[in-house]
Image (cartoon, rainbow, N blue to C red; front, top):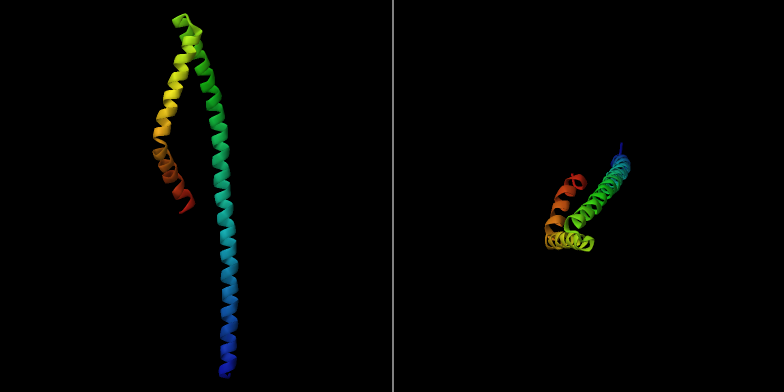
Length: 115
């Protein structure tokens, strides 16, 4: 076997190994993207389902609380004003702590995407 044949054989093997590596890497990344998409879609669907049900339940609680407070104060408008003010206060507090909320979401989601 000559040197040129040996180099040719080695380069052919190197090309075949490189192609196999690229193919397996491509398959791995396709699988990884599929995994991330299913995790994200699953998370979104759970949030919509659970959040929607909690929202409807909370809405009924707020309406009934507002009506009860209105009857208690003998003034329905005052009951609505108090409940609305409480929600405005919660909104202001949530706005003030928005950095912490973002930071917590990033901490929770990072291990799922960068493991």
